Image 1 (cartoon, rainbow, N blue to C red):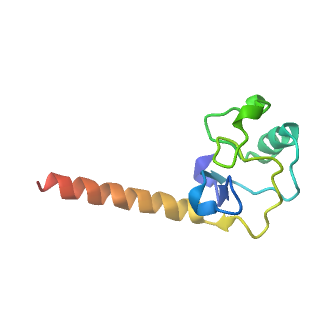
Image 2: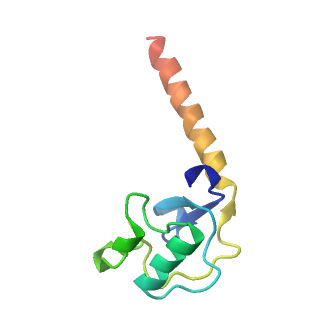
Amino acid sequence: MFIFARHLFSMRLVDPDNSMQVCVRQCPTSDITTWQQARDFAVYSNSRLCRYDIDPDDYQNQNWYSSVGPCPKLPIYKRYDWCKMLCCIIFKIFKIFIFIAYVYLFSMS
């Protein structure tokens, strides 16, 4: 699933830089107002809007819905323009680059 993810989904739309983000295959194209709708979206689109370790069948836990995760606060609004295309791939490459630079710098000491 994660290899084919194309969008970066932020748990907090108004402040995406300071919120948990997950890579998803697609962003919601209609508003999601209940945990059942969030679960159905995850199952049918293969795009988990909650943290990866949370099974869609466990989305009914209302304590998980917040602006910092592990699930986005309800309602989740449709996001045509809010999802950033290919950011997941760029983010993964950046993390690998940082890791290689870290290993290189500390191997020289």
